[in-house]
Image 1: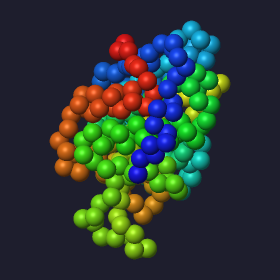
Image 2 (image 1 turned 60 degrees about the vertical axis):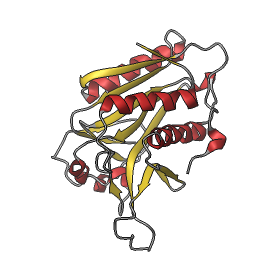
Image 3 (image 1 turned 180 degrees about the vertical axis):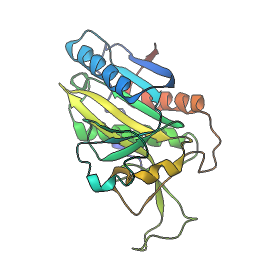
Image 4 (image 1 turned 180 degrees about the horizontal axis):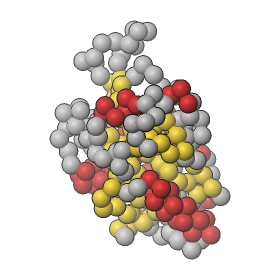
Length: 237
């Protein structure tokens, strides 16, 4: 479901400059991404840089959030594993997955972490809706989910559903970083080395797995439109 009460609630103060919109070429090493975010967040916090959304793809890797359970790393030798300061547990990143690093100053917007997370979920849901995919949030599970009526029901009798987007954020001086990952066409079996986000019993899907042969530039365009409807104007770097 889409929380329409949160729509437009994360717009910046009047007169704020547009959010810089940056798309990386090629695969960005994770260490390089973290170092870039650290620099950008520091500059945004001190007022010497405008807010930034940075879209990247990573080589195959696992990240461990601050709540990661070591038992959820099923195959530690499969890909490099990086400890990260974002919230959440283990996630996978790799080619075919759009990672969106969101660096916004909530002092210029709304100093409400729950509202920000909900707005990020709605960003994904709006993006999926533009491709006729119904994404949904869950009160007990962070991320965005897609129902799979063609699959067997779960052991508790509830309908099967797969995760299509993961969310993990961190704040420093009310500036956000890290963000979301949307599965466009990654190797889904790469998720098998972890319990994604510590949630067992559910599957992982992608846009291509759902039968949508979309290309990354098209997804990026739809992400930008959805972002602007919730967070405000952007400007290409």
